[in-house]
Image 1 (cartoon, one colour):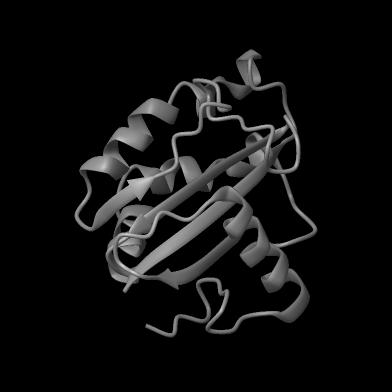
Image 2: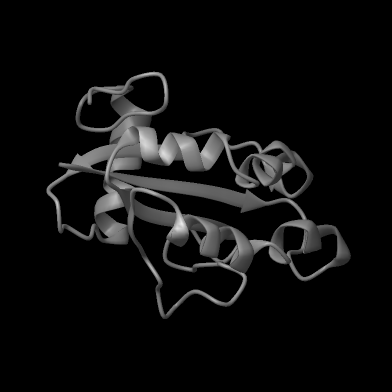
Length: 144
């Protein structure tokens, strides 16, 4: 089994403005770091995303999302909290609004499975309605 994750954020600044540059100027660098990280398997590179990571499929054009698969929760956890990604994460409130719903969902997938954005959004919606479970969970509930 592998671990899939969807992380979405809603812009509170114009991503093309100087205020959004601290995030947008680092998208390629952070994505490249993820792809070179131990345990990284795959990430969605959607033709409907622009070079700054925006995707109109997942709740509109003002939303940035990442959908990826990792070999294990510990691999994803290391990337998120023990690399330069953490610096970007710590500054997220400069660029993104606090969401009323969950912004992150994780779930187990069979090795080789590449989840669709529709599948990921269904997991996120399930988490919002039902809370943490083995079907959809956040950092506080890791069944692996």
